[in-house]
Length: 279
Image 1 (cartoon, rainbow, N blue to C red):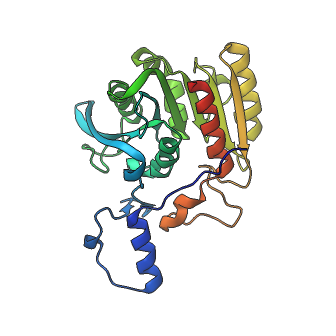
Image 2: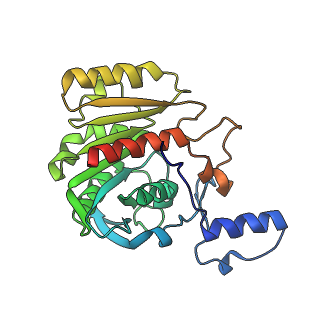
């Protein structure tokens, strides 16, 4: 039986929730790492609790289309070279901490993780709204060049619009470094698009998707007919598009506690598949 996935709350989240519960008036300046607010829609991105489960959190700067962007490589406690999971974002002006909860889970499972701030948000320069595929390619090139990772075990996890960017530019990603495997979270790819990905593929989608059969069963069948790498899928029940559990009601993205509502089955499916491919 798989051990249940656990998510450690960050100090920022604990203090934030305590203040809200107690009705206190403590300034955010007292927190070393407060939750980050999305400047457009007010979503909260709590700082992930990675210090205790990593041997290094490395700030990485790289250039895309003449603009300096910022990312982070999180290395697990293991002493050997770790397999790398490179994350391609969903839509919106999000920072690396939009995937902090996922970094916690992956690092605890023994993976190195690379996340980055989109153009114009977080520590990245430029103006948000352009060049997302180009920026993802530049981030990938920076990620695979890092020390401390196993260059023979590079994996990509893309979500939502990130799955489209990956499919549209897969030949360029592969030219930088062919991925050992690809996980498509909240996939947007139908049978025609998914065949652009010449690698083992695992699709994880919500049961609430209107085109569920197209992006799961039909897409996987098309990939299997085109390539011999292997393709599988998992459907997350009682979830919304980005694979958070809505069995107990809709998600309030302005509440830091949203990070605790990731779909356990979806994340376990992702980690199990990544481990199998990275063996």
